Image 1 (cartoon, one colour):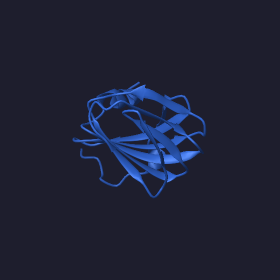
Image 2 (image 1 turned 180 degrees about the horizontal axis):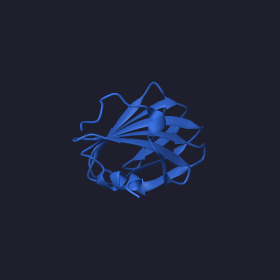
Image 3 (image 1 turned 90 degrees about the vertical axis):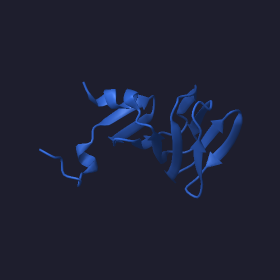
Image 4 (image 1 turned 180 degrees about the vertical axis):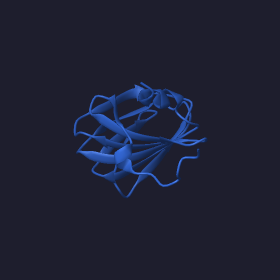
Length: 114
């Protein structure tokens, strides 16, 4: 049976993907969409992956570092992180963000398979 295209956020489990980073993940055949809330002061350590990542701040301020350059993201800005770029960031305030990954984050898919 096909799943309805209409869904509810309340039906998506929340996963803590890093300390203070709480995600609701949607996976399509081509990408992963991460609706994420981050507590002020929490940090995603510098890392890299093969995915292109687009990050959008809906609320708050997030200090993003990409290849050694740091900028404060706000709801009026966004970033496109190329594959394999070294990046990480810290929530300056409590934040709500959307990250879109291409291709699908198989590692994130496994978070809800338990």
